[in-house]
Length: 294
Length: 139
Image (cartoon, rainbow over all chains, first blue to last red; front, top):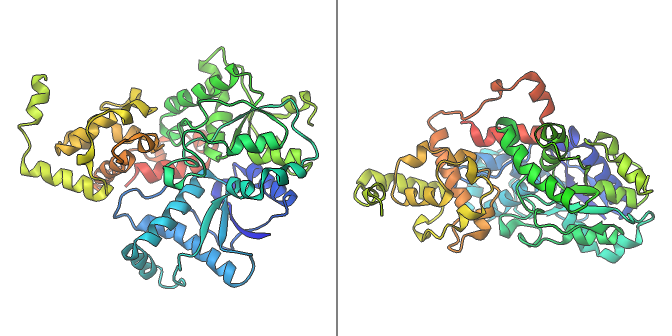
């Protein structure tokens, strides 16, 4: 299966391990991911103000690239696979809103007169939806190293689940990552914090506020006896993982817990190279070695 | 009802209607649907940092009160959409917060610029954080 894959900016820098492990996991599942040539910023956040058409240009331009890939028969269908939760949400919502509003679509087409008109035919999907569509038995059949004894704490954050009509799963009780990790042989730690906010971009100018929100999630994981937290968003990963040293300064009883992208553990379970664990903060290698997985 | 609150009901002037109409136009939400149940405020993870509760912002917006434009609350709102999935009246409160932010930003106001960060902080932060922050907080 050849599909268009939109990575987004952070996947090529701070979240290279997410990008790399996405390719590894997809390869094991028989999915060939192809990036559009000349992809640009996804728009990062969806324009919630109704008259803000300008912020649609970046996401729609990417969707035009996907239509072009389909026309050139480089990919099998008109889906575009995303990973970063923000890219997913922004592309998904811009696509839906532009399609539903002919006036908006007209303005977008007029503004980008040198581009072919966007036909509105692209379907934005998240990698987790794609994997779920393959079936958990299919996932299980590819496992060569079951994640036996690893207590995994799935964390979804906001934009994969909300707003409701654009979410990949039930916004209150998502189960897609739980099902995935059961298929990979791990022990899933169900938790009420899996859809809470990590503090998102407040990490830039309200560091302490973001750190406090993240700590509530980390504390829950520690109290539940989890070995590892699993995320699906580079910003969640930064707030929950990279910021732990900062959090520890204020929270003496917090011991620290590794945080990885879900595809990193998929690549590990599928016996693939390219797990990218060396880029994670804190280092997940000791706990994975302790469990006999590395 | 305190004197402060009852005053609200007697100060609704034509200019208040204009502010309310602008918020409704930009947000695309019918804020009159709100009956002040407070579900948005109880589901919001950031109320401890706010000066007005999200449900209070909606009430003030219904009354077209300028206080919403000077409130901290829309800037603390991080559009996590928890309120959106909880509102029994189907109002997307995050859209209302964005409308208020936009009204202030469109006076060429920047809430926060990257000049305020040290080079170390800039290097440490991933683009996803910087760009989303600037998209929400700068004109």
